[in-house]
Length: 198
Image (cartoon, rainbow, N blue to C red; front, top):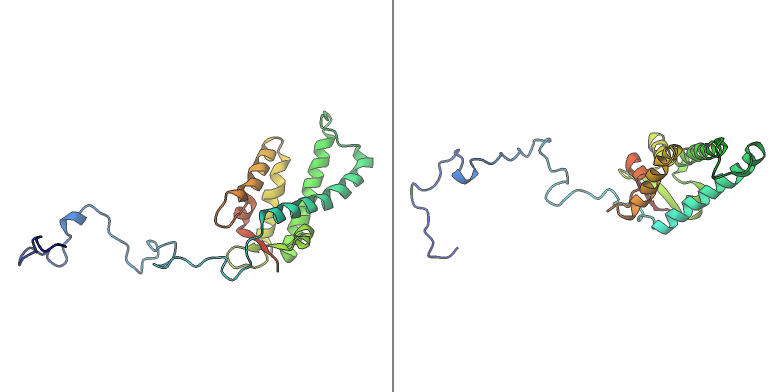
């Protein structure tokens, strides 16, 4: 303030308990003890980082390599087992045998991933590449519902022709632009992140 500005004199100050004219139309701030109006991002210093105390996020290249290893571990033996029964996989199959083969592989992959993540937070591919899935909230192994939800959102939409593949593509690419936790849609659905495993 410069010294040439007028200062309020006696009687110019608003009375205690009245609203100053410039604040008359504004909503009132919530009380500090009101949880509904509380800052969802923490206090003035911000919220605590959910990844504090956890290993760093896994590099995207290692995540991709782990998925490729898992797809080979499940896909190759299963295809070899189904080949004598259902024949070779054909792209232009009007009888639906190729769809049935793909559905079997996807369901087996869903069960494999759900069981492995529930047990230890890692599939064989993730073990090989030293990464693991952790619950975002506390870094624990995603036992039960989070593991199965993550596996379901990754695998099962692919059972829908055309739309399933498009969803899968958006799902797996989502981690390339998601910040700050680089989550795919299946991670967001389960509340998980992929971190390095010492």
